[in-house]
Length: 299
Ligand SMILES: Nc1nc2c(ncn2[C@@H]2O[C@H](COP(=O)(O)OP(=O)(O)OP(=O)(O)O)[C@@H](O)[C@H]2O)c(=O)[nH]1
Ligand SMILES: [Mg+2]
Image (cartoon, rainbow, N blue to C red; front, side, top):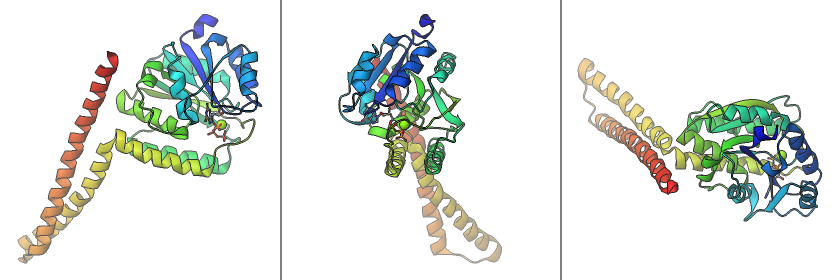
């Protein structure tokens, strides 16, 4: 049984999860994950979280920096297995989905998200709505059709996690990971999972939703500038073509010449057309950046 999961490390970021972490670890161990394949990254808990983890014989390290993103960045250096599974330490994500996520990624994916789609009664209305809006927004920006971008339970190929830029602070880390995979290999799958009510005090605030939103826009610009330039270019192009058609119609069929309108139509069309060309160029540049990063990281 133990051999089965030798290729995966379960990484759990914790910050004051004394109420939950023992139960979380027990669940994971009961699924058949060897203790050596579990790594807790603590953010400086003051409630005895670290002692509980130690007493259970599970490895725990102290993170560098601040926030969940820095915790994952710290953990990455310790991971030796080809796959990394991340899950929260607040008992919200049931460990029984680990085998399914693991089997799925072994089918040739780079990221498999545990999408919180089953039994969602544990999530508050605002929380659910926020998640939905942010996922929709992400899908528009990145041209994806995902169902839960912000899930805290996912399994990822470790080599991909290691090439991440870790530009995002704290709670935006999930978005950055998904954005990165979407724009490199795009081998992403989702497995529907159940989400439970957390044990211990809630940390997420509405404010975080807006921070994540801002991060998404920044990431879209970073990873998908084509979309922005494309959107900015399409508008003048469409307006220019409409105005141009109008001017041409009057010139050809009515015999009226609109000089000013004609000039504006030409300018709008040219600006729009150039933006679209820029969009194509930026797409190529972005592709090249990733190819170069790959080569650089290989050595
Ligand atoms: N190492 C580390 N872990 C953190 C930090 N902040 C949060 N975590 C952990 O990251 C996981 C997710 O954080 P949560 O506070 O549960 O965030 P959430 O699930 O989005 O929101 P709620 O559960 O509704 O409060 C939990 O296991 C936290 O203990 C941090 O600064 N450092
Ligand atoms: Mg939580």
